[in-house]
Length: 196
Ligand SMILES: Cc1cc2nc3c(=O)[nH]c(=O)nc-3n(C[C@H](O)[C@H](O)[C@H](O)COP(=O)(O)O)c2cc1C
Figure 1 (cartoon, helix red, strand yellow):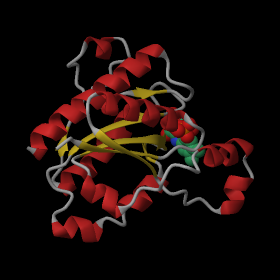
Figure 2 (cartoon, helix red, strand yellow):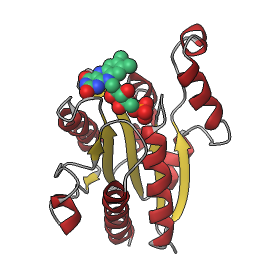
Figure 3 (cartoon, protein in one colour):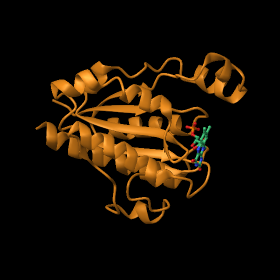
């Protein structure tokens, strides 16, 4: 049985979409069965429509299914990528998390492997607190946190955030790709061990 990984992301302007695509590619290359899932947009329609970049990004992601409770139950591991908003994860992600009570009650979120990545406008604009916030929630689920630490040489080149890859907005550069690939591979490895 192959390891099942859900790549769960939210993105307004494309950065975390790019991270998620690279994570999905890397997890598949590592032998996992992958579901790429986006978090539902919760901002009012007129706000999204009012920003061309936001509207266009949402259109780009139309074919990606929205993450569901079934995805959370199905997966052995979650790769989560969401933007930093005032030092914490985007509220769209939190809105999804707040629907997980019934699943949590059944114990279905326990023993999953979890890793997270993020982006913020500034190099020190709250990436670390965003990742820690996601991991606090993962602890409530009884999940097992699979942070990258400095367990691969790429972590000494990518800005060195041991909680998870983080960057400023824009497409992933080559080092970013390597770092996300390492983090996804590590997640597949540990999710597989837990599942067995
Ligand atoms: C409401 C709001 C709050 C934000 N808060 C922060 C912040 O605390 N620190 C920071 O550096 N960037 C902040 N940003 C910038 C976002 O982190 C940036 O737009 C995001 O990382 C881009 O990811 P995306 O391209 O996947 O949407 C904020 C952006 C918005 C719209």
